[in-house]
Length: 273
Ligand SMILES: [Zn+2]
Image (cartoon, rainbow, N blue to C red; front, top):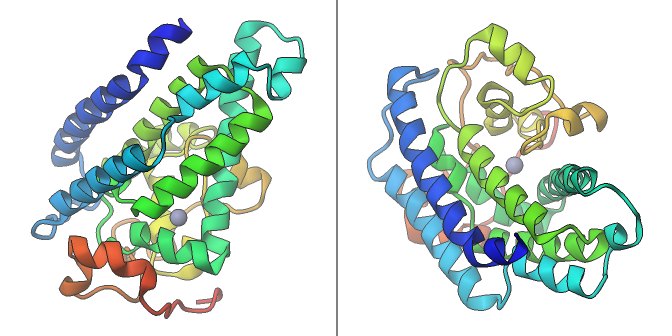
C-alpha cells in the first residue's frame, strides 16, 4: 500500500486536479453564482503560476510530503508512532490534525506581515473562479511544504494518510474557489462541516475583516472553534468586490508582476475597514 502511494501520489494528484478542473469549468458555465467573464489571459496566468510554483518546489526540495512521511514512519518518529490506535482511527486522526495544522498555517500567513506579502498574491485576484485555487506564489508553496515536513515529523502520519490529505487539499482548493451555485439548503448543511464556495468567497472580499476570516481549507469546523467565521459577505455574494484595494490595475496582474508582488509596498487597510 505504502509502496504504491510512494510511486503514484504525485501523478494521482495531478490527474485528480486536471479532471476536477475540467468538470468545475463546465459546472461554472452551467450553474454560476457570479458568472463573471474571466479577464483576458487571467486563467492561463493562474495556471502558469501553479506550473512555475510546482516546478520550482520540485527542483528545490529533494522530498515530497509523502516520501518525507515514509522516512519518518520507518524511523518511528512522531506522536502516532508511540500511541496504539486502530489503523483506521489513526488514518482519520492524521487527516483531521493535518487540516488543523493547515488552518493555522493559513491564519499565520494573514497575521504575520512578511508572510502576508507572499500570500496576498493569492488574494490579489480580482475574480473568484476555479483557477484562483491554483494561484499561489512559489514562496508560499515552498514554505507550506517545509511547514508540512515539521508537522509530519511531529505527528508521524502514514504516507497513505499524507497522500490522501494532499489530494483532498488540492481538490478542495479547486472546489472551494469554484463559481458554482450550490442550492442554499445544501450549502447550509454542507457548511456545518465542510468549506463551501459561498463560505470561502467571504475570505476573498475586499474588506479586510472579511478577508481575515473563514481560513478553513477542508473543514469549516476550525473557523467555528477558533472564532474566525463570517457566515455571509455584507455586500452579498453577487455584489461583493473580490480582491485587494491595491494591485487592481492590469499591469499588476501579469505573471511577472505576480512573481514580484511580495516585494511591492504593502498598502493594506487597517483591520476595521
Ligand atoms: Zn487567505
